[in-house]
Structures are given as structure tokens and as C-alpha cells.
Length: 118
Picture 1 (cartoon, rainbow, N blue to C red):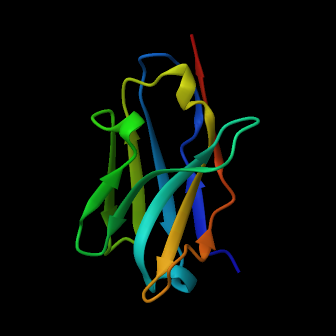
Picture 2 (cartoon, rainbow, N blue to C red):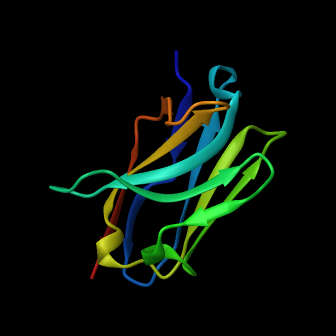
């Protein structure tokens, strides 16, 4: 069953903006933390940002001040607003959920491609 479904990826020029969305299904509603990860070609998947149920956010340094993570728990939706995009932001972006009490993210979406051109 699908747990997380991303949308909103696409192609944009450097300096532009994109907003990613992640629909959280009933199978992943027990997630205490939702997050975005990304994987660029030839690189390992890396953490981008996370948000807890209480709204505490965390960002990797490279996106601090440019990306904003948010959620609507009533609509079971997670977003990632990405501004001032750079070519280094090009990657497949994944939505992830960590169930309460777990030490790792157990739910993953299929990913959405973000391509930033010069």
C-alpha cells in the first residue's frame, strides 16, 4: 500500500522556486516526524529537512534560509517550499515518515525529480 506520495517536482532555472507536496496516507499517519530527503545522481541520499508533529523543524545547512518545510495535519499533507534554487539542488526528492518510537524512517515515497538548470 502507498504510504507517502510526492508531487510538485519539475524543471526550473537557477534562482527559481518550486513547491513539493507529500500526501500522507492512513498507513503512515502514525509518523511522529515527517521529512524530505534527496538523492543527486551519483551521490548518496541525504537529509534535507524534517518536521515533528509539534512543528519543530530542522534543515540541513545547505538549504537553510532557502527551503521551508510545513505540514497540515488535518489534510495529511507535507510541503517543501524551495526558493532561490541552485543547480546543486538537482536531485530526486523523497518524502519520509518516522513512526513514533522508531529510530529510523520507515515510510518512503517514490520520489519526485527536481532539476535546476543554470
